[in-house]
Every structure is written in C-alpha cells, then in structure tokens.
Length: 95
Length: 340
Image 1 (cartoon, each protein chain N blue to C red):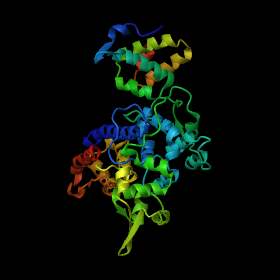
Image 2 (image 1 turned 30 degrees about the vertical axis):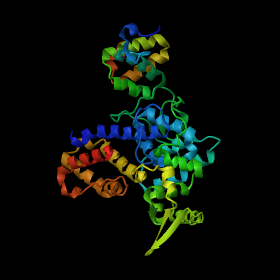
Image 3 (image 1 turned 90 degrees about the vertical axis):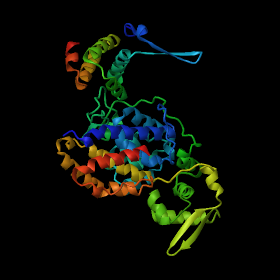
Image 4 (image 1 turned 60 degrees about the vertical axis):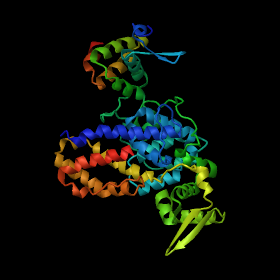
C-alpha cells in the first residue's frame, strides 16, 4: 500500500528561478490517483480521468493499485461498475 | 451524418465553458488562470446560462455552488425570475435545485422563491452532469439528496474552498460592486446603464435591465431628486443621464473603454444554439436537413437576440446563404462572437 510503484522515478522536474523546483507526477500516476478519486467521490474526478484518456492496460494497473487502498467488496463493485460505464468492460472483467 | 456542424459541437461547448470559467473567475471562483476583462458581467444571467452549460463541467458547477454560498446575497432573485420570463433559458429546473442547495437560514426567504417550493417536484430523475460527448457522468455513490428531490442525480457536493468574495475593483464586477454599495435593487442596473450608455429612456432601461417599466420609472423619478440624475424630453420620449461626468471616472475609470452588453439576451441565444447542436438526432440528419433546422432556430429568435445584445456584433444576412451554405457561414459567425 502507498504510492504507485515507480512514482518517484517518473517525476518530471521543472525549475522556476533559483529557489523553486516543482516535481510533476507523470500521466500514468495521475491516472492512478484520478481513478481512485473517481471511484471514491465521482463527479469531476471522472471528467479528469477521461481527459487523461487511459489505455485499457493503464486503467487496469490503476484499478489494481486502487484496490490495495480500499480492499472492501463494496469498493471493488463500485470500481468495476465505473470501469464498465467508462467503456473498460474487459479491464473490469480481468480484475 | 458527420458534418461541419456536428464537428462544431465540441468546439462550441469548449468555448462556452471557457467563457463561463473566465467570467466566474473574475467574480471570485478559483482554479483557472485566465479571467474575464471585458464588459461588466451580469451575474444573474451568468447563473442562468451556467445551469445548462456547467452541467458539462462538474468542477465549474460545484465552484458556482460554492460561490453562491459566499456571494449569493448579491444575486437578484427577482431579476433572475424576470429573465426567465422574458428570454428562453432551459436551466430553470436546475436553478430550482441550485436555489434549494444555496438556501441557508441567512437568506432563506430570498432563495426559496426560486426553488419553486409548493410546485410539483419532478418525478422523473436524470443525471445532472454529462461528459462532453453527451453521455451521463456515472454516479458512484449515494445521490445528493437535495438535487435528487429536484429530479437530478449527482454525487455528493463537497465544499472545496474554491470560491472567495468578489473583488470590487475590476470593471467586470461593476454590477456586484454597485449592489454591495446600494443594495440589490433596480438602482444598480439603472446606475450601470447610465454609466455605460451616457443616457437612456425608462423604456429602454426596463427592457435591457429586466425590470418592469414602472419600477424603473419610479426609481428614476426618485433618483432625479438627488440632483445626480437629470432628464430631458425629446419629442415623446424622456431621457435620463448622470451628472456630473465624474461618476464615470469614479466607477469605470478615466481611460477605460467598455460597452453595455445585455448578457441575458446574448446568453439565451448562445444557449439555444448549444441545445440545437446537442440534439441527439442531429448527426442522423442530412446536411441539408441540418441547415434547414438551423435556419429555423436562427429565424425564431437567435439572430434577433444576438443583434440586440449590444455585444458589438451583427449576425449578418443569413438569407444570402441558401441551403447547406448556411452552415459554414453560421460557424464563422459563431467563432467571431466567441472571439470577441
């Protein structure tokens, strides 16, 4: 349980002036967080997730990670229903 | 059938949402870099358009709900109802739910008038939010009870701290500034009208400001007694103007150039165009049938509303573009409006 595996290695750093460096998380990690938030809270997180346009493999990896954060049956059901409604039925079936 | 018109749907929605974001950002919604710097915003008209268009952007919709909790006392419920009567807006059922959510003990009486309390609630329920492709935004939890009561299904609304009190200094917020100074009443619209138009007749002001003529006439008569508003009769009409000119310098700025836009008229026209583009069966029609349907909505009210909105835009002679030729002309005109 924790951050998606390899997140630190995927950070993209950007310097602003002499004293500020911002580390941006990679698109793949954004998909992980947005899928979890989508299943947990719905609403605009789902719009954000769609804007990231995940591939079936990416969404499946994100779903497996999200299920380590909430191991309940209820969450798994909500997550699978969400994936099906977003057009990822095959990914949902593989979970 | 995929045509220039059906392709334009996505662009039109994005540009409408961008316009809404920029105007709400100017009023105090956080989260977007670009802000509106054009003519003064009409928050009542903006709320009405948002009740239809912000359903395609849940983040914006909820930011508006938050903004209303903080600044809702500066919205004119009475005037909003008048706009609903005078113009064509589809968002009234959503507005009822928004009013019910905004109702607090502090301003209950005012917002309850918009909730349609006492009228029949909608028994048929539909999704409140849509994805940009028109599909319903999936619901993952228990529906928000107040919205569900008004027939709209959505996930729970959470305050995220994405709205703040409006800033009075920007010219875009002039109407809210006047409402904060003078109270939420017709004098604010009269004052703004005279600041931006130099002079006006009670009839023109009543039409453009969405008040009854008697309300405007009475307010102008009283304001004249202050000595800051003077009237002059020309023929059968009486015109009013502000004196002295320093009012404009004080509220608009000496160098500033701005214009009077009747936002409710403009927004109603844009919303009708959107509802036309968003029809589910539009893509199944031939290009000629699409052009024919488009011509009907333009004739019915859209062109007249756009031309009378004061946005400095004339739609032009669309009858010179027969049949399918109307579509590229229409798309070009819409882009011009949204660019300005």
